[in-house]
Length: 267
Image 1 (cartoon, helix red, strand yellow):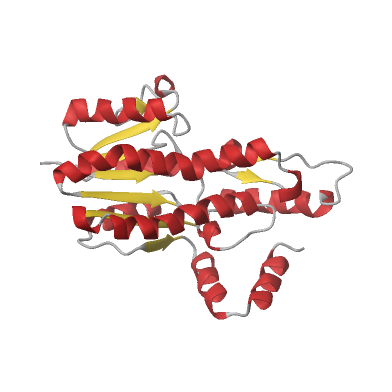
Image 2 (cartoon, one colour):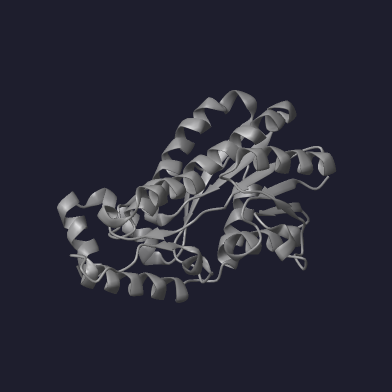
């Protein structure tokens, strides 16, 4: 029997690549979008879901169960980027980002767990970010929201041991997707003390995405995780230097690592 996979944010970018790859491997895939009618040509079903609205989470889970009566793999992929000096990002935008990147995945997990517990099996994969391992300048809110999801996964895993439910994080680096277009960008203000450095960093961030790897690399990594009997707690997928930056953070003194980041971002 084919495993049933639910991918939040499965209509474009990394989520779409994962869904199409898994479908080719014989999985029964469902993706989600706030506006599924915008994707009539999707290669797998797209179910309505807005992770910031709990009522749509319940409806989405019910729809998948109605069709397949089980959910074997949940991939929490829906997320949002945000950039800007922390001082200048409006509070409502910070809260909105955490609603999407942190509280949203938690609520989808909560809605899925009763089904997986009844099955006595399940795998939950949280798509985080290499940026979640470090506080990046002008990406601090994004780093914090993804880092929070990384950490809470560690606690969740231990709480779920009795129910034969696995949970893991997969942290991507930069991939060539449309994520930059969907980010909230705090405006570069003319009278801002951060104007010059933030403006330069914004350009650099967009270039990194444009020059990023093929999202199929993430799809292949997710497939390997699903096929692994006992997944690790953390996975990183991306260019060597992006993954190596996490190793450097562990071994270098804090201020030396901070200096490396500042040099990288030309601050």
